[in-house]
Image (cartoon, rainbow, N blue to C red; front, top):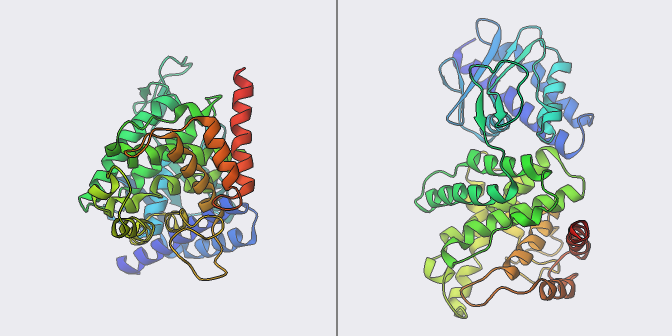
Length: 386
């Protein structure tokens, strides 16, 4: 088999594996669709292996490398590289003799929320290489590996500033027409999820918005925190949880294509300026649609997050349109954070006033069940702190 044909089979194998992970996160690892995708992936294995009888992949600069050259650049390859990188995995080897059960075990591990209790482990025929990250100050009963590094234990409040800076760098790159760093967005969201359970109050990580110049960046990290909090309260985890966070990070990316003088204008927008502003969901969705590796969920959320629960918002869609539940989640987070933030045209609102407004808009602008759940979380946090 030619190298080009093997590469095509390798791309097919990885594509089916990534689809299986997404379906396992959305439904369950035992779902018939997951088993079907693993079966197709398994059938590609022999032709995808190199002359030594193995698939050997390495991640370098967010790219999958095989036999010294990039495997390719498409949504599935980029997504697989990100899944592995997010779990500290730098190399993966699949050798002759691998079974469908081992592939299923890998899919299960990659579809679960990443934490220490659910590490992605090697099996007899699937070997994973990873960087061991140790927390500074933690007792070490064994010798450190050569690759071990020591890092401080971050809190959510630390991360909110740290990740805001990283997001600003990514967004500034987009404004300069550079390629969107999807891997960077995955890292931001993964870091939030990793430390989320350390905090009794995830809302403490919300950053104050001090000026219009940083609004898009800080607002996006805040909406991500609020989205993750809502999703986790509903029992969502694994890859779907990551995708919900990523969707929040990217929901307003269309504003990067709106003139700065409109975004930062003090006072009411003119009719023509408002029409330009209303284009940002479409511009954002189109940009994400054209970017390899972006979850399709993020495209839907970017397009739908201003539609409102009763469809009186924008953009206008055909009758019978069904909004994604993640768009409803994002609308609640977006509304709350916008109200509590200082803007160029008004001061931030008090919490009680925000609650009153959101409850009054439940069933109109916002999903009433999600509004109720959102404030139940806030009440629970307040109760724990008393």
